[in-house]
Amino acid sequence: YSYSSTHKEQNDPFSLVADELSMVANRLRLMVVTEVPKLASAAEYFFKMGVEGKRFRPTVLLLMATAMNISILEPSLRGPGDALTKELRARQQRIAEITEMIHVASLLHDDVLDDADTRRGIGSLNFVMGNKLAVLAGDFLLSRACVALASLKNTEVVSLLAKVVEHLVTGETMQMTTTCEQRCSMEYYMQKTYYKTASLISNSCKAIALLGGQTAEVAMLAYEYGKNLGLAYQLIDDVLDFTGTSASLGKGSLSDIRHGIITAPILFAMEEFPQLREVVDRGFDDPANVDLALDYL
Ligand code: GRG
Image (tube, rainbow, N blue to C red; front, side, top):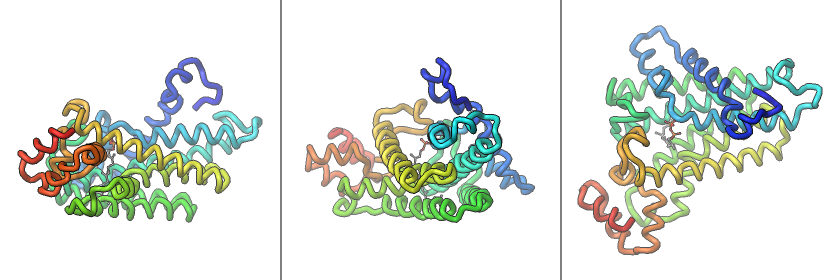
């Protein structure tokens, strides 16, 4: 990574972390090595080249690390070559890897819960290897993530990311609520979205700050930034589910509504058309009801 950005980097900030992202990808592949062949092929499934997804979380985390480390290091310490920078940065890279591993574990379990058959443009792991192995592979990734987390020997960071797993489970459970009375409010949606999506991003941003030796105040700002970014990311994801194509999404569109998941576009439409509430209350097991709801969007 470079401290004096070139013209190319000014136009494309992602190129600042491009090399590091491939290092993260390589390390992730090594982190899931196991001698049990079946488990090995399940665990490495979404870390293989070409199906690594958008890598949004590691990209954000490494860019945040780049921005923060410049601001705390004395000018004499700046530069990729010195020992302090390298050590600090290596620990922040571990957070990028652990975060991506927790994310992939949650995708594996999510696809089992939703009975989804595609992910990242290929067959989901449950579709290809079955539900049982997909659940076990998710558990295995979580365990490897925990071991990597513990090796950082920072109890605050361990608690932050351990709590995220509880949040993922909580958000997913909140999503299972069926009555419109409970779930058809923006407040409920935002809380669920924080747990399901933003908590991982916000807490890992905070971890980057803490491992970078930033003050508690800066760590809190990093958390707030990650929270808002995570909420925005999910809102966009929700809209894309209605507007995207199978090719751009890597899975079928309209999958949220078909799974009965109430997302922001429906909540906004409901504000304008209160009669949509009745349609939502009927549930979306009947495809005709999905079509009816789509008419309001
Ligand atoms: C045991 C870790 C664990 C979780 C269990 C299933 C579950 C509880 C949580 C699911 C959480 C989930 C899938 C939230 C959705 C977050 C989201 C926006 C996913 C899509 O992220 P992208 O678009 O995916 O960044 P890629 O494929 O690009 O990485």
